[in-house]
Length: 198
Image 1 (cartoon, one colour):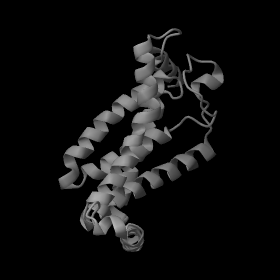
Image 2: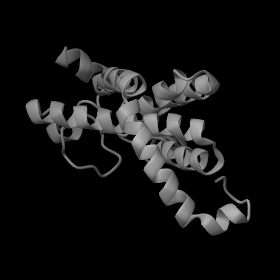
Image 3: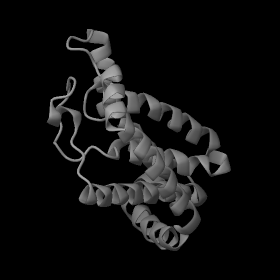
């Protein structure tokens, strides 16, 4: 399996001298496109009703569960990143932490899968899931992950989203109540002006 993982990595990873356009695309998708999820969740909170906010908190809970699972996996099994063993080409600076599973993709897909399981957000979940494939490609292309790291991230994210959606209510409900009170206090001037929703 490790040989297959390495072979797939070398197939996707950037060449020694990538074109300027591919270099920019790879770095943008690997480093910056992932910011869409936290920005989207924040925008959804500011403009959404309580039902929307509960779903968004479930997505956040799924992301946190997924990252916790990844941390536990890394404690039990340290898998070196490609650049740590001199494999392929690395285009971005990164710590030499364990590569499996990808934290970026676990968080992204955990949010995407959570949204997918709620009917009003079904299409958004699909769009985010498919966009995640582009980010997954980019993380391999720039040399910080293997393809199997992405498969592992998808599995962890799916489980985390299911866990949060099915059993997260007992945590999400009280957190939603507390955050809503805090939000309405801190954002009272903006709420009065109608710039954000109460």
